[in-house]
Length: 162
Image (tube, rainbow, N blue to C red; front, top):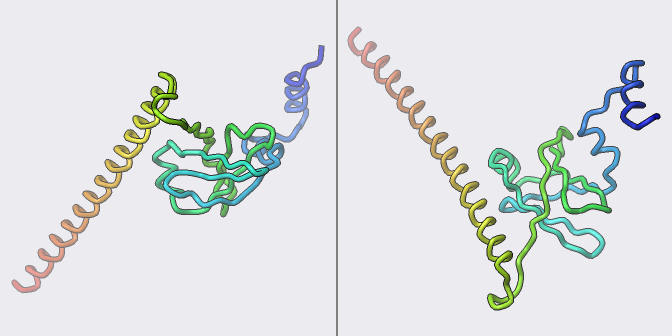
């Protein structure tokens, strides 16, 4: 019995061309847009529908927030999008659609309240991680400035003695 996996394995043995996951995304995604990331949110408009995607990886947020990214997706399944660097076309991450909870408090279910709680905790975790990285970077800069100042004082003291 021939399956797609067995055909792939046979071609890889006999000199087939290896294809990465990013290449597969490039081949099969029919939606491609360059979109600016604002406040860790990517807003995609397609076929008179607006969808929102929230980045949840602090490393990616620090890298792309406020810049344009290349977004790829399939029009059949817009539940997730693939983010690429527009300059190098290198794959960055996959982002799932942000599901909003709408309505007044009386019409919300326990499931809606749980979704709001999870989202709030996720945002808090991301904010704390970014704040820690920012503070550690500032501390390193201050330490480097302090060491530079110390070297400068030491060298000027030596010059005064001589």
